[in-house]
Image (cartoon, rainbow, N blue to C red):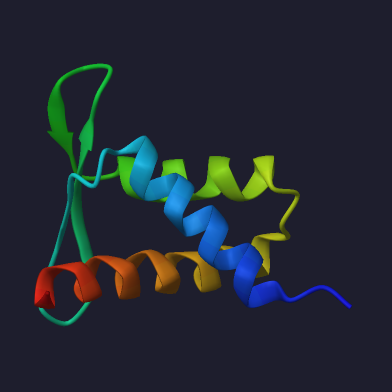
Length: 82
């Protein structure tokens, strides 16, 4: 049996690496902006697109995208507390 939590964590870490960790979030865990390394600007709508693209690369279903998003937020909030 596949452990989906590990898959979600792996995809979330790919999202963070792709953005070089440059993701702005609120204290309550809402993603505000993400840094677009190709255009060298902060973008409001790019986070969702990057998450969708990485999830599709990992062959995840659309209903699993929210799980990956939660892991991205948990990872970033965990790093900010350390």
